[in-house]
Image (cartoon, rainbow, N blue to C red; front, side, top):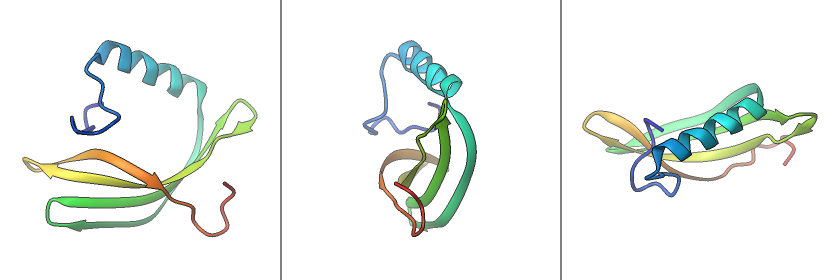
Length: 91
């Protein structure tokens, strides 16, 4: 929440409800790993391509994303992302 840009589609004005939803999601997810494939920056914009290995109970819910960031006042803020599927990863 503290690193999500206000212009992000993930930004929520109701911070209490947003935190409650994030807490519930985190409690339900078993994080097994993170692999970063590339990171770049161009001026005040940056990108990170990653694959996160996650399980919800016995079901794998892993995903990859190329995340877009913007730097404001020296801090990086998450804006949005596009699906990223590295070679050899299940989708």
